[in-house]
Image (cartoon, rainbow, N blue to C red; front, side, top):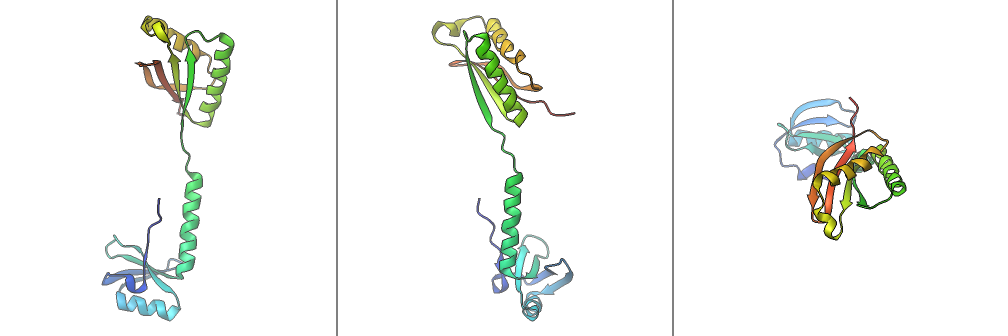
Amino acid sequence: MASPTYRINHQIRSKELRVIDAEGNNYGVMTLREALEKAEELGEDLIEISPNAVPPVAKIMDHGKFQYLENKKAKVAKTRAHVIEVKALQVRIGTGDHDLELKAKKASEWLAEGHRIQISLFLPGRSKYLNEAFLKERLQKILSLITEEYRIAEEPKKSPKGMNILIEKKKAQ
């Protein structure tokens, strides 16, 4: 995502501006010429920070410092953003109990990290035509081994390769 570009000094098109300085002091509404004169008097740049406001808001400060602060804000926002992934777990109809326990342990770790998990019951060949109640029972066996609190985000549904269910971490009340 590209950072927004700000108009500075003579690039600003608005006739009137609400002017503030770097510390947030409000100079009030001024004409563009008055604002540019004030910025020049202080030895700073006039930066239009909110062009859609009525009247638009402009800040008097050094343009380089302004860009540095904006980049710093964007970097902090990016580090705070938590991406929730959908992790996939595939189990066959004949998977042994020990393997199911290992997969359930991994699923519990992923849930603790806050990820969603899609559990796929893979059905090769003729096993695709098994009784749906039996298949749901098999999925339930896997779900019962998961130690972390979870909720079902999407109910079990048939897919071309088997049956899928989507679970996610239970939100604290």
